[in-house]
Every structure is written in structure tokens, then in C-alpha cells.
Length: 340
Image (cartoon, rainbow, N blue to C red; front, side):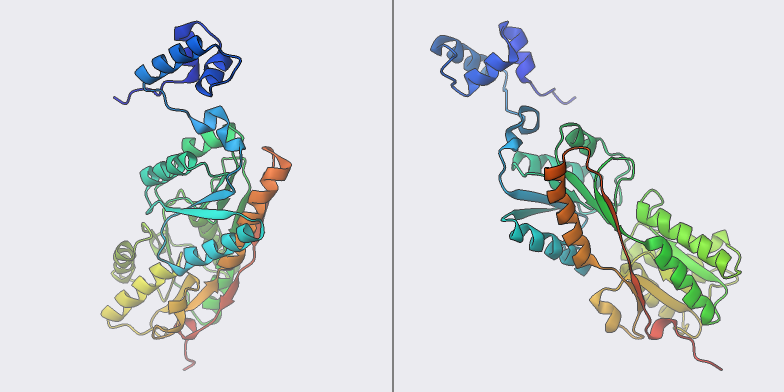
């Protein structure tokens, strides 16, 4: 069982003095007698007391550092978003400290703790795919500590956030597939609790309806956002008795994995199965066929997240501006079927 952190209040109760007296003694305040200061420090040492920078308000003295937590540091998507954040931070005379959650909620929590210990002035976050409870962020918000979310956000928390209009983007994908003669359109989604999964699923179902197509549950499959899991999801679709004639993925990593599996099955893209991605990574232009994808304004998203961060300093803890950025469908060879 984890031992509870000893607080200033615990020390004050044990010594029979006020919390402010303990706090001032630990800072060698001249109003506290040397004898009492020594006694307080001795008890603090014996109880292994360490300051909690959040609770003590030490972070109010700005360090001009922003913590940034992202699911990974490899993909162009997050590298571009970081560049956007950094461009605004630099203008304001701030630095950024980057931490990767590696798509793990536990690592995300560790990142929060480590950034707090590093005395950052606030945190900009894209949630890990595992994150389904938010107490580690709620604690910061309760202490009026700036937190901004981007892309994968927590809709339950009253914080500033920036996303793209995934709902509208997916409806555009469905319309494009329909215009190319596709009728059995499959969607490989991410974990269902993520906001990006939810709004793109809504766009998928609504888009089918608007195109006069019926939603078929077997054509909607989930994966954990890894290439390996996306391959398994694609196999599940390709093993259906009535295969899809179009597939789109929640991001390009999923689409690339699907492309590989479709080719393994000896099927042609786009003639047998049309394919579309989302985020428009650089690789979209070098794979064969080139991948139709939704351009995700990642650099701008990073800049907007940083703008919201600095606004939160000025406007206080009730500030919760929500920004939704537009996208664009970039049509390439993977989704345009030849006319026979």
C-alpha cells in the first residue's frame, strides 16, 4: 500500500501550530524563532516531508516553461503540433518541455507528476488512447493550474481545447466514396471512448444516411490505433462474406496497415477497394497508390493550443474556449475508381 504524502497540515497538527507557521519556518522566515524553526525542520525531516509545489502554490512564480504531453514523439502529426506550440511559446519568451505517454494512461499520469515537479507553468495535452478517467487533470484544474487539450480531448473537463471538425470531414469522405460508386463503406475506428472516435463515427453514420446508404454494423470495427491491430481489423473486414468496397481509417497509420493487408489478399486499390486515411502524413504521397487523406492542420492546431494556454493566464480558471478547425479532403489515386 502506498504511504500517504505528509502535508503541511499534518506537521502543523502534530506540532500544535498553524499551517502558515510551519510554512514560514521551512522558508527560514525571520518572524519564526530559531528554536521553533529548528524543531519544525527536525519533525519535517523525520516524517520525510517534501513540498508539494501544486498545493503550496510554488508554481505561481512563473518558470516560463510549458509542459506538453503527447501520445508519441515519432509521427509527423505530433512533431508538427509541437512545432506549432513552440512557435507561439517562443514569441512569448517561453520554452516547452515534452513528455510522451506512449499511449499509456499510467505513463501519462507519471508525465503530469514529473512536469509539476519541474515547475512548468501549465500543461498542453493530447490524451493517450488508454485514458478513460481524468482525476490527474481534475486535480490540476481544481488548483487553478492551466490545462489545455488538443485533438484527443476530455469533454467532461471545463478546460480550453482545440479539435478538428472530424464529423464534417468524414461525411465528405463518405460522399467521395459514393461518387466513386462505393456502396459498402467500412470504417476502422479507434477506441470508442476517445472523442475523435465518437465524432467520426457520428459523421460516418450520418454520411451514410445522407448518401442513401444503410449503416451495417459489421463494417464498423475498432482497433487500438497500432498498425498491428489495424491489420487485424482489416483482415476481419476482408474475411466478410460480402467484403467492403471502400475502407477509411481514423488516421493514416490505420490506412497504411489496411493498404498492406488489401494487397496481401490480392485485391486492387482502388478498383476492388477504395481507401482513405485521415491526417495526411507525408507518407501519403509516396505509397503506391498515393493515399487520399484528410489534411489535418496540425501546425495550426499546435499554435491554437498555445494561444489558448496564454489566454488562460489572462482570463483565469473559468476560461474554457473551444476551437474547432476545418479540414480538407486531398484526393489521390487510392480512392478514385476507374470508369469502365
